[in-house]
Image (cartoon, rainbow, N blue to C red):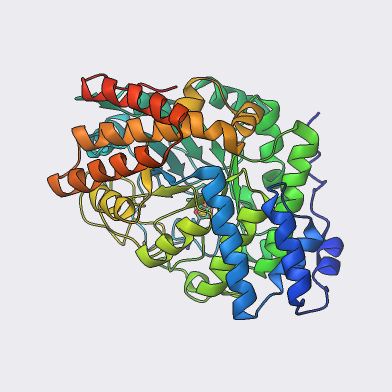
Length: 466
Ligand code: SAM
Ligand code: SF4
């Protein structure tokens, strides 16, 4: 039975109570909690509230170091890459922070045709992308929700040279149970939906018209998706709307609710910060701005609180912030993104059609080279989804011992594909060196598996995984 939309898994009084923790905690308390966090079983809300109150630079550095350790143990040095595909910026809602809101006359409205979608996808495939996140406003062209299903089919249908998109994730408005079942049938990977803010009063202030005014309909969407059999769910908060400490504890309550009810929490958490958006005063003046230091704290604490849940960082952030947070816990990043429908085919960013300003404008090849120079393996792996290792099965695999034998070899083989098929000469030489040094560091079993896959890719086979 679906959660009643009038019910909510968020207990606001309990959150405010937890935030009343005496501040700041002393070093003994902090080290005690960090020792617990190192066991990689997560953190309780009260432990998290205590760590959120840490301001002493040395203790903060200890938190960051523990997060780096957890990230390295669970995810190794892989970073999964994807590109968003904005298919439509038509929207009936009035979210005061978003350029796509219905009354904003400054944005040129457009829903791509299936031919235009195919053209965008071809460009992304030819850059080397294997994962796409389909994004749309909440108002579809004449075909209604079928437009989304058709768009997904179009994305999967495009093949160019040795490439194709192997996993389509979607970020679209909440659906009914029947629509979620159709979405599952369209073979999506992750259904992604951000609550934006868990704080009801703020939610009501910033969502002033349209279906999205209904907090309950939105917060229960992951329940409906899970019940329709979509087991990889992405959740998130739009930071800047309400107190970030409140949002983190609420996010944890949401996760606990999903775990209790479905035996598995979200597959990913996204951490967008409000960025300037054309025609939005609110976006340029966030009511609760999150500083760079607080943002790093958010990523590090999430890494420790839910060690096995992926954290996604988009191109909203600058290359510098992205680099700092990779080490602290981020496991997936977008690259070479455009947030205006048609933006890949039309080249330059069109500020009249985009959703918000990007902090990282670099093309995929440059991002990959940079990431590889930092010692991270850019991964295009989609093996788990292809092999049905989703939901609980994925979480079991995510345990440190297991991951070494699948994710690391698959990450390397998909990176090798990229280097052979799409990379510039400069990126290829950085990448080939990274593959050699990574193999040297792997344990014997994992190295053997990786080498087998690499031999196949070098011999011309594609899409090999274990
Ligand atoms: N329309 C659907 C919805 O609202 O759920 C999905 C697509 S919407 C374009 C995707 C996400 O963009 C929103 O959930 C919101 O968090 C984010 N977003 C909107 N305006 C933003 C801004 N000014 N800065 C950063 N992210 C923003
Ligand atoms: Fe529409 Fe989504 Fe933007 Fe709100 S955030 S205006 S629902 S596209």
